[in-house]
Image (cartoon, rainbow, N blue to C red):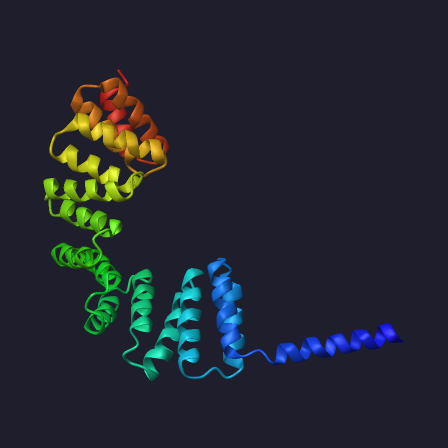
Length: 274
């Protein structure tokens, strides 16, 4: 009987302790789970916080954080609903506007995303992440000049923003400003020494400038870092063929064909099957 009574007593205490949890406790629990990359668990914790009647700043933080967690598991429309709730009651909440813009970028709703980032930047003119994200959206809409201006601003406010340098370089590459693009890719590699994409576009820029030997060295680095990088073998084959290394080019075209580049078959037949 004493053991049974003790069990009942412990159960009662446990339930009482649970019932005493506050929305702030579940906000903290959700954050802890989020940082452990347990996004579903984080969402469940935030749900509990809302059920307990979260108010004021705790309420907005739970909705924003739940939206971010939903975005991590690609529940993007549901995430936007959470951000919409906050924006409805607090139209100038920059966190909700920014994260809604990110979700809209993910959904390829670039024009609406830009509107969100415009509002964020009106509230926070030095927000480098907002400039970067708006620049990305502009690039997807083929507004490369506008994209570059936003990356300029992002770098102005965050001088070590490696991805802003890289994306600005890609935009300059699209505008055929190859020497300027190269400088951005070199800066990216100074900040991120093994960033394969930067080596890839550095090599492509050098191919456009007919500096084939240097391009091969850059594409070697791409393949060293990640041999599965799309286009690495195809571009290196082209550079090798222009540099006079046809056997090397043939080997790379063969690898490119294995990766699904049908054009490689044409080059193999034209230059290697003889």
